[in-house]
Image (tube, rainbow, N blue to C red; front, side):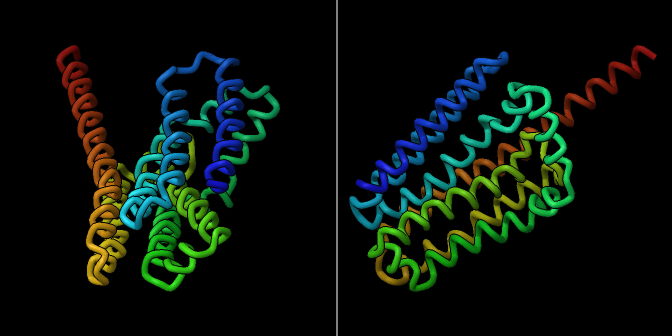
Length: 236
């Protein structure tokens, strides 16, 4: 319960800041809803953690596979670029173009960080240590959320970030992340925790749905381009 309280306070602070920024510009309500839903799912994922091992694993899944993409889809970076005073927005835009950020947002690095965290906490003794030690447990949740935000940011590519890959490569990266993370689910089942493994497996499915959405969006975009080319050719 103490960990839930530690999540609620910063979540309310972040949401208040998001609303304040949104009030300075015309901002779609659906993005604000995504941000609120993402914070709520993080709180829920942490809050249900102690009910059972199966629910614990489902909580991990919803944090990385549902809360993280909702927060990314709320586009906080774009909001800051629009709402901050011009000097601050200019500094942020310059930081987004910096070489160090391009290296940090290299998609394979984000992928490695995400799957590394998943495998480290699900295949090693860290798994049971985190269940017993509250501090390590809180750190586990934070690492899961940060690495998931990292991965979803480079794969959804909805923000003006450098180093963007093609949509097909980004979709493949999400599918690969889901597949590698499922190794933890398989290990739980082999160790005799079938319900926990199944819960983790099911809660990670949004990674695959995200991959399908990225690919489908690319198909629709290409169809629109083809139609525009046909119209231009017919007009010429």
